[in-house]
Amino acid sequence: MIDYAADLVIQNDKFVTQVDAMERSVDNAMTKWKGEGAAAASERALAHKLQGNHLGTTVVGIADHYNTYGVQLGDTRTALLKIVNQEVPGAGMTVDDDGNVTAPKVPSGTDRSNSASAALAQQVLDGQASGLQTRIKALLFQFGLSEVSASTALTTDLQELGLYEKKPDGAPVSSGVQAILDGKSQLPTDPKQLHDYWESLTPAEKDALYDHDNYIGNRDGLPSVDRDHYNREKLDDELTRAQNGDKAVAEKLGDLQAVQKTLGDHPDAMLLLMDTQSGKQAHAAVSLGNPDTAYNVSVSAAGLNGNVHGSLSGMVNEGKNVKDTAQSRLGVLPDGDPRKNQSVVPIAWIGSDLPQADYKDVPADLDGRTWAGYKEVVSDTLAKDGAPKLASFYDGVRASHDSGSMHLTAVGHSYGSLMTGLALQEPGHKPVDDVLVYGSPGLDLPQKHWWLPEKANDVDVSKLNVPDDHRYEMTGGKDTIAKLPGYGPNPQALPGFTHLETGPTTTQDGVSRDGAYSHADYPRNGSNNELRTSGWNIAMIVAGLPEEAVGKH
Image 1: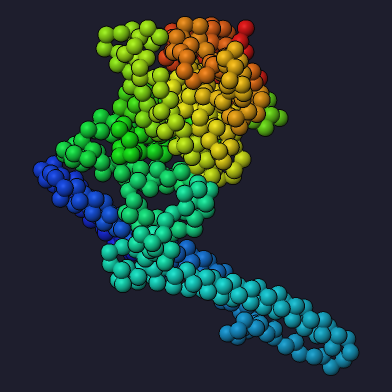
Image 2: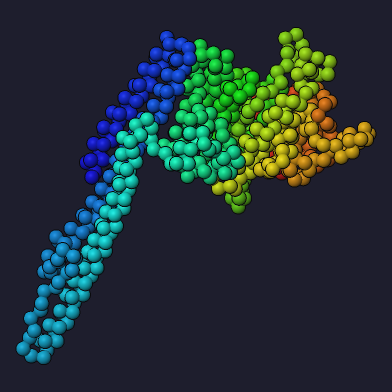
């Protein structure tokens, strides 16, 4: 069994090498072959690659079972034969095929004294024989159990492998999955239900669903590992097609390259969203680490002028600075603090279209006189379009978490704070523990007395579905965007928010930090290459350390 497993691995490696060679050949062909036929061929090649990979994975599983059970049976056999071939004969005893051990008979003496000694000796020998027999039969029983387990596992493996002959165009799937592939059924839309269903699927079924919907990695509720895997597959496919002029994705080449570079710059990054088709702009979400296994997870929504090609890399870099600062502070907590050394995973989310202001001949910072930019941000239409997607993303992060015990923070900057506020107001969605907004032009909260202009600031903050003492805001003194009218009062004027400092200060770690003044300053490093006061506050809220955030003076 062990030798067979080793040979099977060698043969499978040759097969996998051929699958990789096929993929490279198709990619090379795409440099000369253009048009719809080329795009179809590229997608079909990707499907064959997935099928080949799954077939290879199935064979590896078979080899693993042969090797695992071969070692297990071999170890049991070695222990058994040591007793049978050495200990039993050495004691002058015999053993039959069923493991029964017989001790030699001690001759009885002629007198009473000798008879008693013989009986005692026989009793000792019989006891030794019984002990040997117990050990032998236990090993025989263990060997039998291992045989049954090996037989069951290998039979199942070989049945799955055999189905490839009956279904040569792909791996076997269940009737439920086949109904989805045939258009007779659909995947659950609720993130928790989807997660539970997805976890019941085999790798072959997951691959088949990806082949059916190449954007399946964007579904909220899928495990982050699977989202990352399938989104990277789609990223590779679209990059190849965009680089070769496919009209469906050619205009998004810059976005795709930005995603690829961001992933390459951060080895621990995971691609949780990759979409070039559903909006005018490309969409992406990248985490630093696995949010399914981290305790502290944050989702930062981009704001005005946010886009994948120009903003994703910067957001992820800013997230890394926040993560490093947060985890460093968690690491120095006293040993008795349950938060000590908890992990932190930030997620940069550009999951919907955002206003893109025209700054060709206007100042870099926006105010009410800058009409070219003002006209792009005075409407909440894009925020309302994106809010359900962001709310669903929160739900997906919660649903896919391995333990369910987590601290989830919603972070929104600029127009992203408006979208965050609307997402938290979405009915049926309550997965967030804390919310932090900064540079916010308002949250579109309902007014309690909408008919009374003098009470325009009297809004219902409870609609955010985040409890008191868990709502935070920051507003820099020179941030003119945060003072624009249109979406209700700035959170700095609202009750129920904890107002955090943005000016220069020295934080509890002894670092002197710059203040944040302009609209873009908040998450960026200061002149000393350390997070500003505002960035420190972001890190502390995200880490679940609100007592170390700097309150407004």
